[in-house]
Image (cartoon, rainbow, N blue to C red; front, top):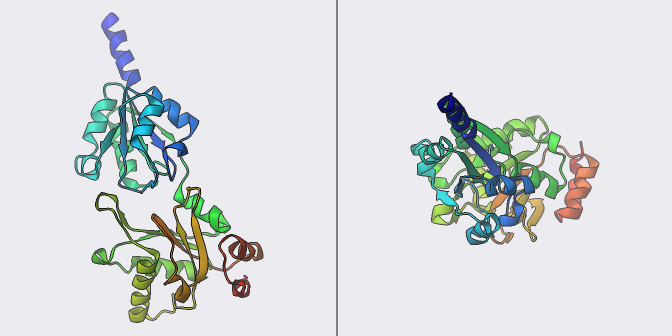
Length: 277
């Protein structure tokens, strides 16, 4: 009987908690997330899905009073998160993730694998670039269509252009996440992303993007000094957005309040008023 109770207790303690870190530094985690980390038997963090420019691992470990193990893309993807799952099979493990934990499909796969192994999973959400960008620009979140990532040139894909075309035909906004490689300290810039789209336009000629297309560049969302600039593509090509990470938005049809928000918050030219729905 004692053995059975002991086994049930061990099973009850098997848990993997996904905790969002927010967007910029170690202060972006929620109080709930901090509490989960403090009570964990093992804490892991991945930092390859997004850049948190001012995050300090040393300061974070001071906040939780525990060591944090940084895991690589190889460990979570190629090795199917074995190191994390093994820790969760012995007690409570926390995986810290930039932004919101389950925006990256990598972590959905890890959560599914944990559940298959009988490991309970929970999620503590964090600020996401998806909502942050809309808020910074003043655009209505419900008017965004499908989001897309614009990859580095060596991983060239026409998908971002086609997604933009589809959203534009529906009058919807498009959020473009720009490719990153944190391990190599490499980040696709707004200029590079625009040049890629213009190159595809020159070949496809669908009238999706040109120098006269309105776009919004966003840098360092979640920080105390983000850069948000709305203008026509020909102007944004030479705009200095400062340091990464970067995002790009192509507005669809604008509500009058959205147009005023872009003018006020993103320094858009007053000509955007002509794009009202």
